[in-house]
Length: 179
Image (cartoon, rainbow, N blue to C red; front, top):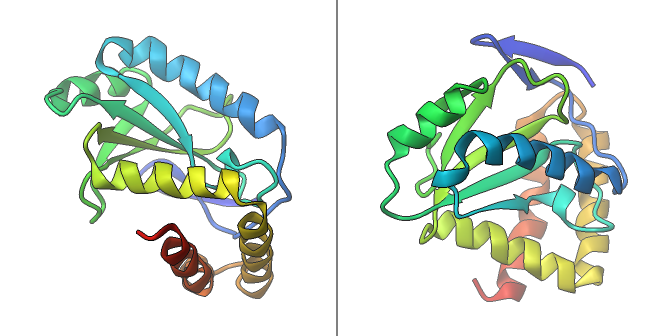
């Protein structure tokens, strides 16, 4: 996998989708441990979301993590705690209900996306519902995984086209979920 640097932070350049890796569970736990040590008192729980959290699902080897905080948590405290271990707040990146964080100096950890979400966040609820639906519907995992693999083959250097290609199956899954 190749990378580029944007504002001093590592970003993935190529679209690579792998078969499910058991090691992703351990990768999540390792990242969670550092996050818990840095911001434990501010965090209600740490959720492994995204494709790497679903057994059997092909995925980009990037762990998606939602740090869940109380609705009345002062975000500046969270930002400060995470900044002490190399995370930088990027804002919500156009998605209400989650705050994104970039990082540097985390070569010892699996690549990951970090978001902080208030407990009542619609975005958090959407992440959890999608993950939990897939965990209970192996046929959806199979179809979604095949679409992701095909998208990666078609668009190995174009993340936007990769995302667009798989959007139809995601919308279909949301309909099945009745979201």
